[in-house]
Length: 267
Ligand SMILES: [Fe+2]
Image 1 (cartoon, rainbow, N blue to C red):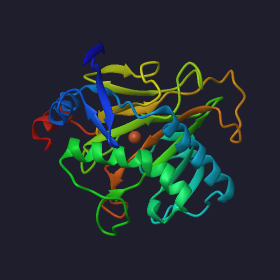
Image 2 (cartoon, rainbow, N blue to C red; image 1 turned 180 degrees about the vertical axis):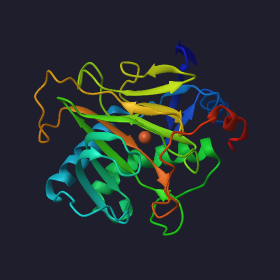
Image 3 (cartoon, rainbow, N blue to C red; image 1 turned 120 degrees about the vertical axis):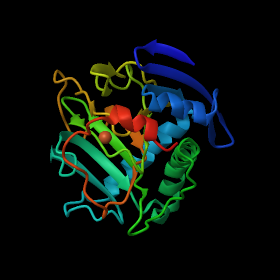
Image 4 (cartoon, rainbow, N blue to C red; image 1 turned 45 degrees about the horizontal axis):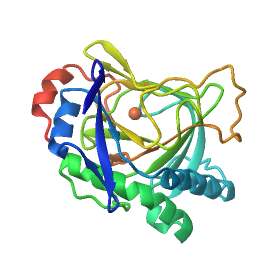
């Protein structure tokens, strides 16, 4: 592992039998996350699998009308978001593809997505001590696999935070390459009143891990580029939120005293 900036650590990993195997034990990775640090895991997931995930998502979106109704968290849908998020009270502009019913997708799309989401799921399970599968479970937390496109020309996600549990650790996998496929935008965090930017540090196949209650945001793609929802260029990421959408709504204030919570965090 390597410290690349204050609170920013890179950890190498091997991709073996469909699993992300870090160079240090999962418990040690989680200890670094909880300290807290932003940990970038170089997963080694092959580029063609990441490209297939983006390709399959785009092909699926082309034949699937944009969702307009409020989210029901029990289907596969995609939306072009340009508003202030209801739960997080943060402004946002991006195109998300959310596969709550990932197991119900047509075989081709499902296989391309699960080839990457299964390794993310298994790694998250290893980090958090869970043993969760995909599928909708009303009244309980479950996975909401998402592929997000941040188009060129001003996409972003404003500062927000999430309750620490049940997610504990957020996972953001880069599906394409900074400096080649896109030139600006990345996630930023606040740790001990210091801003930690990951922009430029996250390569294709790298997964950013962060304590889920750290304030964070996605810095904008350059306004110098022309914006278009239909232009597939820009930053693509896969995330794997785990929560109960019908559970108690989160407090709308940022958590106070999260440093004390670190000691209590169940790993
Ligand atoms: Fe977030």
